[in-house]
Image (tube, rainbow, N blue to C red; front, side):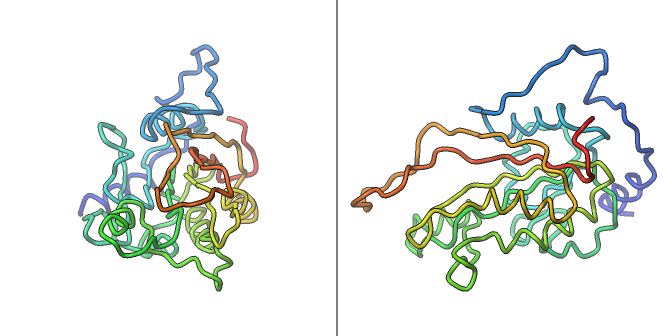
Length: 238
């Protein structure tokens, strides 16, 4: 039995407990801020301690890339990416999730591409590699990447345990000279897929992206993204 099969089989045998190590019922109430100025990894750890109503273990990172979210983490994470060069535990499309059993994960993490291809210069190509900006978002796609969400959401709901968490990092963008609002699309689509959208955290970075090639600004330069917290069920209560 390989490590992945062992995780799947162990997870399916584990009892569905409402008390678990991440949350101590005797702790005092510790709120989480709706605005976060630290790293994604630190925010993920905070969310995985604050929101679960069942154990979040094991966790599926459905867009693993180089695994930068998990540097220094001791969480049991199943890595998945469509690009085999990252040597993840599962190589595949997160809109299909072939070979993954039903109801095995306590949490799924999703960080999809936030922009389309940025050109083919050397620096742009590196940007594409780092941020997965290889997926088309032209006229046929309505100038957004939101078409990626429904098939992923269907699979995420299938592989999550009841009351499991879906944590999604979504960034709005400007494309075709107009603002696109994928975080609104994602929340609506998650609700339609049977999730409950429980919270929205604004993650702030130090400064907006700028370029000396831009001659005139028509939109505010974004220096934030959203982490959307969804539960696999119809209640947010823990």
